[in-house]
Length: 193
Image (cartoon, rainbow, N blue to C red):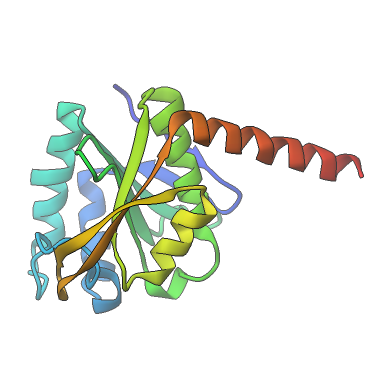
């Protein structure tokens, strides 16, 4: 399956390519990015970490048809990689993302999440999206809340920063579609007023 490119109000979501590895390597190895990621991310991050991840993990998953990965780029600077967002056919873990800290706090990841969640439900026709996260990752929890997800499980998981309380958030295809329809209705009403 050919992976589409998406544009949001401020972002270009471009399918991940091997050529993206050097840009990812330059920005990914920051504690603010990796600390709440699953402990399968090596830390300290090796000099060839991005190359190995893109080549051996992400692109291999895309070739199998069980993973979908996009780089995040500012729409006005499409050559600049600022993050990554991914979808996975993995029980309890269907979406993950990271964003360069200097680009955080602007609502960009919400735009990216909306685009790929639409793809998950609308194109891939998946019935449910689940996203795990560390309880300490309050920004990620707020993102899940804003996108209509609900907390469905708690426990503990191993992260780069150590073992922490964790959560799983989810939303069904029907819930997502209702929410998107309501958002479109609200936008149409606002445009008419």
